[in-house]
Image (cartoon, rainbow, N blue to C red; front, side):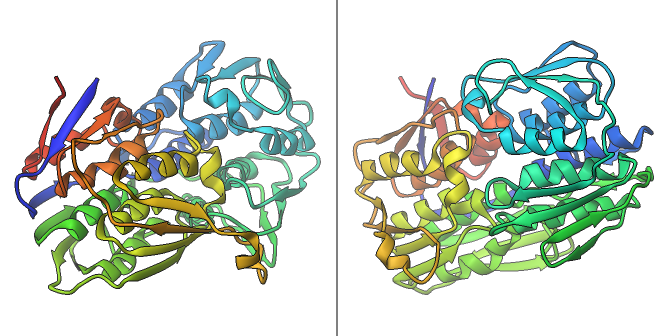
Length: 418
């Protein structure tokens, strides 16, 4: 299926009640499973990833299929490594291309019994009953790949006889997600020490407590993009807090460069458009907040702002190679994402990418989604500038099932293309 999107005016007005954060929801579900006692989780994400997480944690099946849900796969790998019995954990063909070796190696050092069923270092996995799990509690793990590996290890740490001493080697990516994990563990009674590059978690027991999930700041990014493209904006996003454990909450400050003002009041942020021209140049390091990089690339392209991006390393191993996907799709509206020569970053190890050009939205360009929910939602705001088409729009179910319905409430015309 393909959707055709358009917006008759560039005025944006209404109320959006955002879904619960997928990242927070999946952590809360894993902690509840490790706790061993049920507790209420309010405002749980309705995303497909979270539904899968909930279903698989409750399943007695021998084969568990995590589909395309990377967080679910990684968290379940660690969880199943602590459980008795043998289970197979698998996923989509794309999931079988996403590396899991670092997490498996770390779990094996702790005493987990895990084997690869197809390609070494990749799903699917056969996870057996552990043998002396946690006798060795000291791990060194590269910190420059996915924070989900680290979060998975930290959340099982208190259930191990000696806890975990986790040494982070190299530059830490997505630090806010790791801090989110530790913040939530503390809420449920598990403390930690973090000195230098070493995080220590002592053995203990999670305490069951009612928990409420914040709304999803990653989802808010698409509305910030629409606000940036608007002539006039009076939009309220419900469920968001200025003081948030989500790294993507930097959006409120980030989007000021594009004339979007955020006013917070009692769990709601009111977006308005200031009568100013966006600055001609925007620079940001997305290492702490990679999930909003696609959105900002589209924002820069839509407004003709030169963007200098760094911290995109993890985008290559997401649902799609998001860098390659962005390059292909942005070019359809005469916007170009280019990797700068290494000499540009000679004083650091960073990779830099430049966004250049101003979007020309003509002839209903068709954007492909690459089985990636964020590609669909990041490009949707371009409908503010002209009619566009989105291929395979159902991918949004992964994190934001109501996305297209919510756009209709704001006056977008969303319909199957003939």
